[in-house]
Amino acid sequence: MARIEAADTVLVQSAGSGVGMAGIQIAKYFKTRVITTAGSDEKVARARELGADVAINYQKQDFLPEVMRCTAGKGVAVVLETVGGDVLTKSIQALAPMGRLITVGNSSRSSVAPDMDLVRRKNAIFARFSLGTQMSSYGGVMAELAKIMELCGQDKLRTVVDKVFPMSQVSEAHRYVAERRNFGKVILIP
Ligand SMILES: NC(=O)c1ccc[n+]([C@@H]2O[C@H](COP(=O)([O-])OP(=O)(O)OC[C@H]3O[C@@H](n4cnc5c(N)ncnc54)[C@H](OP(=O)(O)O)[C@@H]3O)[C@@H](O)[C@H]2O)c1
Image 1 (tube, rainbow, N blue to C red):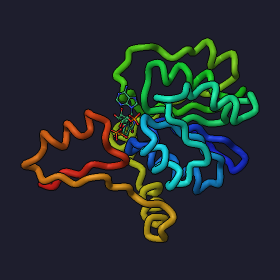
Image 2 (cartoon, helix red, strand yellow):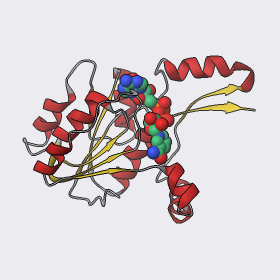
Image 3 (cartoon, protein in one colour):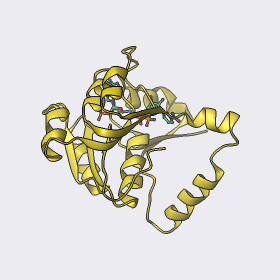
């Protein structure tokens, strides 16, 4: 959906989320410049290891002025957004004219509506993607999945598994995710 090209700068929100860690790698696979955000210095370091060119600890620094500084005031061509609320609002502000923002989540569970007026003023594209809808209504994403598996097999993409819990520790696993301690996937073994 994002139609990314090598010349693009891509802002991937929430480097430590499952979506974010995959987004950084896929954007780098297309040879783009990747800016990402995370809530701790440790996650910022992990994001750099995954290939992010710029990683911002948003707890220490407002990401919007930093993104604008890193793009010489132009903004980014593409945003992959998963947090919602204030982060979604600022992500639209971080878009360059004719940019594309793909929203796939709302980790903050915010009910703040996107500023579609600003999207229009920037001649930008605002799109939502749902894997669930794609799989239940439109025959899934088998070709894309096969490509991703091929790239994983070639070590060009990797799944980051942060922690594995037995099902008997399901509460601890949920607490771990709720406390935002994970970088990548948390797995429960039945
Ligand atoms: N549309 C789709 O097809 C699709 C597919 C998968 C997931 N999703 C959605 O995408 C979002 C991310 O899923 P995920 O499984 O990748 O997430 P995850 O692994 O649970 O990571 C979520 C991360 O978001 C960051 N975050 C920033 N602001 C937050 C806030 N206010 N509250 C909670 N977390 C916040 C936290 O990292 P920091 O503390 O470092 O900021 C947190 O660790 C969810 O809303 C999920 O439902 C959508």
